[in-house]
Length: 303
Ligand SMILES: CC(C)(COP(=O)(O)OP(=O)(O)OC[C@H]1O[C@@H](n2cnc3c(N)ncnc32)[C@H](O)[C@@H]1OP(=O)(O)O)[C@@H](O)C(=O)NCCC(=O)NCCS
Image (cartoon, rainbow, N blue to C red; front, side, top):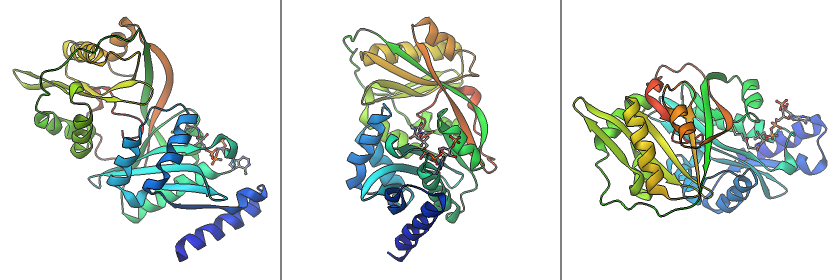
């Protein structure tokens, strides 16, 4: 209570100092709760993002103390969510500000709050995937580029989704994923596999797992990711299987620009480039993982 009063007063004063409109001087940051999910959905819908209520719930379940909203006159005007992976690094996602209140420092204030929370937990590195709009805001807070990601979109005629007899065992893929991602995110992946078992693929060759992928049913489109492969054959096989099992009219995939096979495979199947994303970090990351095996990421909000 005392803390939130201080936050309110701090923002009141900095709002006054910045010469903000009176209504912005009454903004405050507080922890996000389940009851804020509809407000978060409203903001992500304005930005035409693909997340569902379940994605917000995952953030709130994983790190309830690390999700915040900014209120202006009691109305949610911005959000930020964080998730910590094995205390190795954290991810910041769902950075959204109501267009009505943008360019008044709300995005920056929410990020500072998230960083302060992660610093208090001694998390050595904070990472995120930045949109072109978010990137300058992150740069000012000390984030630097790691590598480029590209969003590709396929628009097709909706078709019959190919049915699946049973989902493969994910356990071997989860072991490889820790190596590839740089930290254990098995809880998150298990929950995604439960929500969309038809999208789980694990390819096994002579030398072990040659590829694995999961998928999500978003509010506007289906997405493939993580999409991880050791060779071109596995890359294409998982993409084709996913496309057949989805049947959805719109598909989005966030693919690593440096991957030798992914972009070509997407282009050959009619995907079109939509926008760049930049993976960024603040603080040294000694758990780099193996990005060279990644065709597509799980999602910008989770890494
Ligand atoms: C990106 C986003 C979150 C930024 O939110 P915001 O509240 O506008 O962010 P800020 O106000 O802190 O900073 C934005 C700009 O306003 C400037 N600014 C901040 N306070 C200001 C003030 N009082 N007067 C004038 N400009 C100000 C900042 O310097 C910054 O400038 P820059 O774009 O040149 O770097 C918002 O644009 C958004 O929701 N975009 C859509 C979703 C998205 O892309 N999110 C990022 C995901 S990675």
